[in-house]
Length: 169
Length: 169
DNA sequence: AAAAACTTTCATAAAATTTTGAAAGTTCAA
DNA sequence: TTGAACTTTCAAAATTTTATGAAAGTTTTT
Image (tube, each protein chain N blue to C red):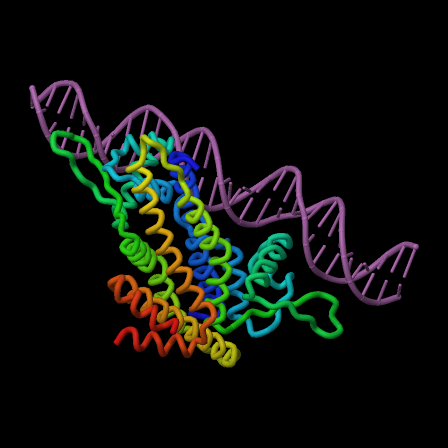
């Protein structure tokens, strides 16, 4: 396989992976492009490489910057903005975990907390009890996941590796 | 909050959570319904509860059965099929992990393996070297994630809890 | 202060995904 | 072996998501 093909294939696959995990396909493709680009890229270069519009490129690059997966940088003597991808995959993983924890897991836990306060009436005592029990159960698991992800999200890679090695023993 | 409202809210939130993680919203809603239903449900009861068509209900219930999140059962004297949800959230987590590992992570690792064989030409030696290095790096992380998920996917919940407690010490 | 260089926004268009429901398929009882 | 009861399929319709690109906004230079 040639380098150009390989790059194209990587971008497409990474985009596909992101897409099945609920991340905008183009955003994941842009991320892939940054992962394998040594140099800084401008919005125009991203537009060109992926054949996408300025608006699309701009919006998705901005989200990547928000997630901490891409950094904004300036070149001296140049007016426009350039971007550089975070290459450390452990950091990438941590930042994706944090973004999604904040956006999705935490709100779900909040809802589960509310749902524990459902009212009982004379007629539905048993039903309410069963519902509360299951919600509590789900909430506890969600909180375990949340804590686990928080730990991973702020741990050194070495610590994780060491812990994992012990784990599988 | 009343029980009916609470159930509705749970179904909507669980559907939303699934949806942002790339799981069909209706499938996640059906799953939510099963999580909080004590009794067996028929396809028609699911259709009724969520106001969805027969085809939609059928397809999504079948996928849930494939994933091991819902079981098919029969009532004696009844011709039609009934379904029961897996209530053990640890098992649910494990089965979701396994399904997605198989469908998405494993294929990505396969692609990364292929990409390591990109050819070098006289002109692009350095570039190819950099590309291979980064792909190798990504692949190693993907494999670490894969192994971690495999471990979690087949571990007892108690083992995980114990390990996690040690982890956060 | 005007214009040039660049970035952001957002209404509309395009594309992708999901849903519907009727027809086809299957199973089983009579 | 017929037909009733039920399940599955899938083309077309509906909905949701994503992308476009021109206009508006911002910053810098002249």
